Length: 493
Image 1 (cartoon, one colour):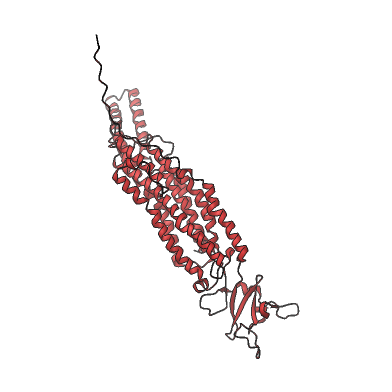
Image 2 (cartoon, rainbow, N blue to C red):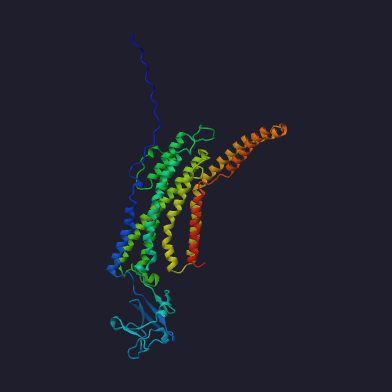
């Protein structure tokens, strides 16, 4: 007898599962090689430029006004300053009617015989050696010279702002590595026990498996987008809204690059005619062609590629945290975690990433610090520093607001549930005291339960509602205090 065959079960097409991100991503970038390429190799290149053009330090020039108001040129030779008293290029020098500067003798360096020390420079130019106290007291010349001053031409080693680029680049690359690694930690935290799906346990979560899957794909796609020229491998799995969001954020580095290119053009024009722009010459001007070309190429790499990518990574970090926290909060998808190792309800990794956002911005201050130390402080610079100091707390806290809202909501729900439950302990103890005044064991039992309830409720009330530990906020506060104090000390406040 032939047994009837059981029909095969219907095939149910499952939703496409997110694929693992491709192996070639920003996590695989050789960071040490980037430090070599962007910082160490340029140091060697500009050292070579200084050797070829003899532009490590440039001789300075200046003007000294004597007691009769006559302007006398000053020149530097081997680190000492001389007033030119005989030269065909000196308009005050008349060979048929020679004159000398009307300065007090204390202005000059006297020899053992009490005469002014002289030196014959190039072109039979005679210079009188100035006293070191006098020459060191000369202020930097403005573009319109009206008093004794010195024009400080800047060689490579006399350009502190440019030299600040090299440690800035190296330290920024060191700081960006943990920032990029933090992207995966955020994604892992989201897929851990921190998230509760709809119908799980007792809760009001509206987060479905499809919502969580879409969030996971979005996070992985954003991590891939850290290299904005790479295609997104799981783009076909994203919703139109997520595709639009990622497409928008990938435009950020290109937009910053355009501004960087415009800034490069403006700076290069000023450098080319440095004497007309600043009133003094620099090592990268029309008088030092190799220095100008090498600086132009290096700053092009920094302004058009390097710094836009750094700001883009920080923008993606902020966006990843903000979108993850906001979407989970909208769906009430966070699980309440009473006991967590991070002292932040399991959300400590979000706070850690915010601190990394702040740390990566700190090396960018090095050129500004160099400016404060070596150049006059302007009101505009002070305003910029104040805005920067205020902006760091915003950079740290703003992306965490979604987590804070969620932690406050979960804490209130937990306290309401505990209050309802612990009221029973109170009424039981009250009943024991009122109606069983002779039953000391019952009163002790109900009193102990009430005391434990009160202790638990107080502990719950003191739980934090920010996704970071006390240690982390102490680190952040130390950074702000240190920067504020350091800057106010530098500018003399």
